Length: 279
Image 1 (cartoon, rainbow, N blue to C red):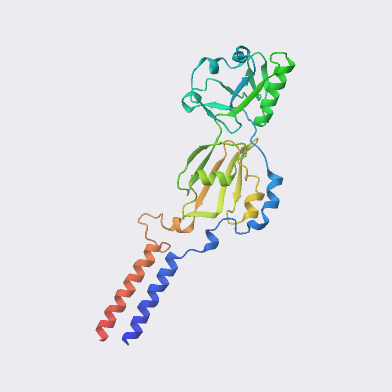
Image 2: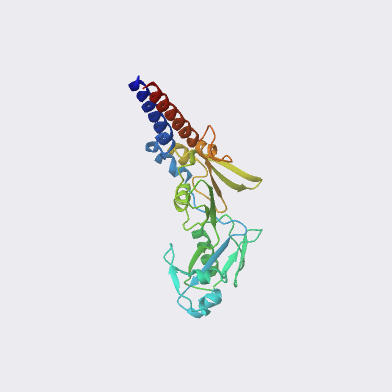
């Protein structure tokens, strides 16, 4: 009889341990079918393009620094150290960039007002296209013979919310910023993040657009129109059932692990008590 109750105790403990501590790898691992995903990637490859209210930093260089100063008056009149940018140029440090003294804001018509040139339409253009447009206009207007134009985005970012380690707003630091980049800068999903149910919210011309994504499927990730993020996107990671079950007032419901651990402890105690009585 003693061995019977001991077997019952052992069985209950094993069931609880395996039921509460062992997660299904299919619910955790990313891109489980990634072998076929690369073929889809190229068809959706895209760079960030400018929209109204975006800010851009535009610097013009040429052989004659006095001519360049006309187009970069504040940049050349301030002695502030610079940091190398992704494009190989130099971008002022954060103390300088935070003042937005040389940033151009895209207006509601998609234009910026550039020195001498006046209105320049930049909406829908990539960073290198903005540089090429400014360079061409400078040459055509006989303002500068040999201009080199550098363009950097200054205020573009995405927000990552929900079950990630470091939620917040993050700067877009390159022209092609993917959902995987966003997850990386946010410190990855917590163990409570539902990898089958990630949402990207994007502002469209007629309202917000919601894209659902399953991180366990490489096909689903790479085929999504939201794989490459745009400025202003909001990434939301939904809590999984485990987190939802633990979010009650006392955190001890039939859906929570703590509840079943308590049940196991109680049944084990009963089994031991009965076993001692029988002895």
